[in-house]
Image 1 (cartoon, protein in one colour):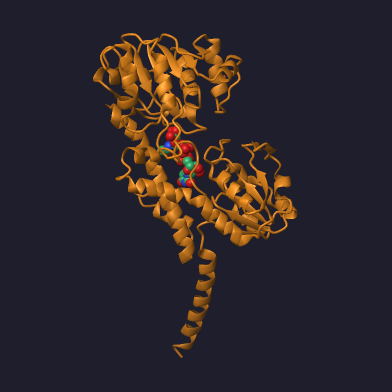
Image 2: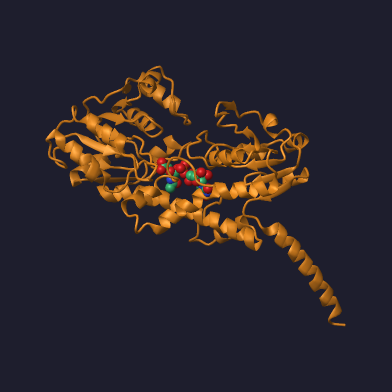
Amino acid sequence: MTSLQKVCVLGQGYVGLPTAAVLASVGHTVVGVDTNEKIINMLRMNTLHVEEPGLQQLVHQAVSAGHLTFSTFPHRADVFVIAVPTPVNPNRSADLQYVESATRSLIPVLEAGNLVILESTVPPRTVEKVMLPILQETGLAMGSELLVAYSPERVLPGRVLAELVENSRVVGGISEESTKRAQELYASFVKGEILCTNVTTAEMVKLVENTYRDINIAYANELAKICEKIGINVWEAIELANYHPRVNVHRPGPGVGGHCIAVDPWFIVDVAPELARLVRLGRLTNDSMPDYVVAKTSSMVSPRSKIAILGVAFKGNVDDVRESPAVEVIRRLRECSYELGLYDPYVKRFEGSNTTDLRKAVTDAKLILVLTDHSKFRELNVVEISKLVAVKRVFDTRNCLHRVSWEAEGFEYVLMGDGSCRQRAATFAAEAAASTEDRVLPE
Ligand code: SAJ
């Protein structure tokens, strides 16, 4: 067990705030730092800007126990954890301005023996090329007097507190001492394994994970298009393939959203554009899915008709719309002059309008278009919806509704990636012909 430390966590977003709270909950003295004064003032009044199960209570407890305070600038400490955003520039290179400014803000407070850990997702060699030149301004010897490490956050929104503690953690320092000290800090709250490597490998590991997922989803999306073309159901094909002990094909959908998987692969492209061909193709394939959904939707319902959209969030059971493929589909359908009714029980408001009124969204709709796999959609009152819509037709891009209930109410159920309806009809016709021949031939 490591000794209790004074820790400054820079960036109080969906990773920084939970990390600060968890560190404080095991007894470290933590200052949560954010340059956004509004956020800090809210946190001081115990109002959280991040919605995450259990977080409100954990922050409240840590603050009440005197282990967690908030500030707009870093204080002297033993350890500094940087968890700031790393968006992607319009030209798809990484925007490292927040990593740079957070690192720079440490210069006045750093002392010999301190440890600086970066957790933000970054292109490989960011610590070496971007942070170290700034940190050298302290005059401290890098890796011996000032310890520096990288450890990627790998938590899933909605499960952040559990995953912060339970997931394995990768830690890579610029020196052995840096790695060791960072490992000790994480060992104070991580129950999963702590895996040590060098700093640049640790940076790459995070990108390897999210890009694996992006390419896998791109493969599923490509399969969906192919299966539609050849008349089979991609969901069934993937499910059966996944029975193989070494196969795990992901799920097709209207595209990949969120601030991680839709962004991180570009950081690999950033460092080796000429080599990252598959990575780029995966990204482009997933980015093409909203177009595909819009084209299929347009073939089902004519412009100026009303479409009810179920789901605006980038994935199921979250209220986050960042990079959401649903937002892209909505934008394009509006451009094509469709009237849209939006329903999302998590997002609640989108572009200034209420999205919690299901009745309003589906009334007079000629199509129900499902774009997010919220679990709540399986419990929808189909009987009531069937009385409100103008045409009983559903296009499910996520395979997340209870198909039988919708078909029982007379809905035509179109599942993205399922070309089997056409094929089934052809199979029945062929079977009928074959059975006639069977009867005729022996005689
Ligand atoms: N999606 C599919 N098909 C699938 C799985 C996901 O279309 O089979 C879509 C989702 O609907 C969503 C997008 O992909 O639009 C991303 O969702 P996600 O659940 O795959 O990932 P995130 O962005 O919520 O979180 C990921 C996680 N990384 C991995 O699972 C490898 C998380 O552990 C990381 O901490 C997080 O990125 C991050 O911060 O990088």
